[in-house]
Amino acid sequence: MSDVAIRVDGLGKRYRIGGKQQGYKTFREAITRTLRAPLDRLAARRDNESNTFWALKDVSFEVKQGEVLGIIGRNGAGKSTLLKILSRITEPTEGAVYLKGRIGALLEVGTGFHPELTGRENIYLSGTILGMTRAEVTRKFDEIVDFAGVEQFIDTPVKRYSSGMGLRLGFAVAAHLEPEILVVDEVLAVGDAEFQKKCLGKMSDVAGHGRTVLFVSHNMSAVQQLCQKAILLEAGQIRFYNNTYSVVKSYLSLGGIAKSEVDLTQVSNRKGSGKARFSWVQIRDKQGQIAQEFSIGDDIILAIAIQFYEKPTKIKLALEIYASDGLAIANITDTDCRFQLNANNAVESITVRLNDVRFYPDTYYINLWAGDINSTDTYDYVKECISFSIINGGHLTMRHLPRQSGLLFLTPNWSQQGLPNEHFQ
Image 1 (cartoon, rainbow, N blue to C red):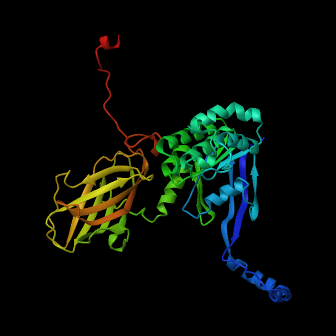
Image 2: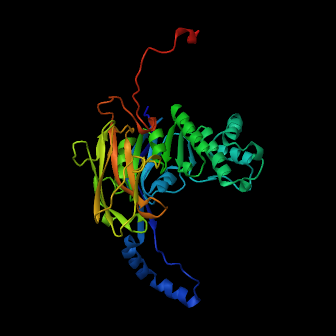
C-alpha cells in the first residue's frame, strides 16, 4: 500500500480580475444586449487572458504519511490558495489533488465555527463535519477544552470570544479530532508565546503518531524546528522543494541581502538625520578574502566605510546581529570595546573583527547604527544591510547542528576531577 498521504498533480487556480460591475438596465438596454451577445462573447474570449490571474500554476508535489511539510513564500505567493484547494474549500482550475484520509484545517481564526453556537456546540459540529461520531468527539472533548484553556467559557457563544480564545479553540479542535491530515495556516502569527509553544508541540505529536501536517508560516524558526521538508512558492509556482534548511536559506537569499559586499549609498531602508552615513560594507574571512559562508568557530571581519556630512564632536557606532527568524543575537557597540572613532576625514574606514564566532548554522543579518555619543541623535541606521551564513561545524564538530538546537555552540573543558565522593552519598 502506498505511503503517500497527499499527491498534487499540475495544480492551477485562475481568478478573473478587474471585472466591471453591471448596473441596473432598462428594457431597451436588455434587448440591445441580447442582440449584441454573440459579438460580446467573441470580445470576451480575446480579453480573457488579460483579465485573469493565476494564483497557482503547474504545482506538483507529494507528501508521505507522517511527514511535516512547511510551505513558505512572500505574501501573495499562493500559499493560502494552495491550502484552500487542499482543504476542499475552493475548486482548482486545473490539475488534481489526491488525499488519503480525513483532513482537518485551521486557515484563520474561527475557521468552521458558527458564531451563534457555544464552544461546546462548535466542537461537536466540527467533529461531525470531519466524519466523527458523537462518541468519538466526547472521548476527546475534555482534552480539547483543556488544551484551549476555555473551560470557563465553553458554554458561551463563540461570537463573544476574543480572537485569541477563538484561535486556541480552533486549533485544539483541528489537532485533537484525529484527522489523518492537519493543515495549519499562519496560526502562530496570532497566538501568544505560550500558545505557540503548545501548538508546535502538538503538531510534532500529531506527526509522531503517523499523521501528516502541512504548515504555512512566516516564522522561519518554527518552520525549521517542525518541518523535515519545505516548499518555497513564488508567483504561484514552486521555486524550491527540498530539505527545510536549504529551502529557508534560498527564501532568505531572495530578499537581495545575501551579499558579501554592498554599496550602501544605494540603500533606501535607513533612518537618521544624515549628518553621517554608512557608504559601504563588506564581509571578509580571516585571510582577508570576501566571503559569505563560514563555519562555526571562524573569524568574521566587517569592513565598513562611513561618510561625514557635518563635523561631529564624538560619534558612537553599533551593529546588531539577528538570526533568520528575527531573534536578536547581539548588540555590539564601539564603547563596550573601548574604541573611539576619530572623524578627521570626510570618509573613514572601520574594521570590526568577530573572533571565534560560535553561532549555530543559519543566516544572520546585520544592522548598522551611527549616532551622537552624548545624546539619542541618530545619524544613520541601516537595517539588514548585509548578511552571512554559518553552514557547518567546521573544525569544531562533524555532527549535524540545526539552527533550532540553540544559539551558541559551546565547548567547555571537561574533567573527571569533580566534587569529593561524599557529596554523592
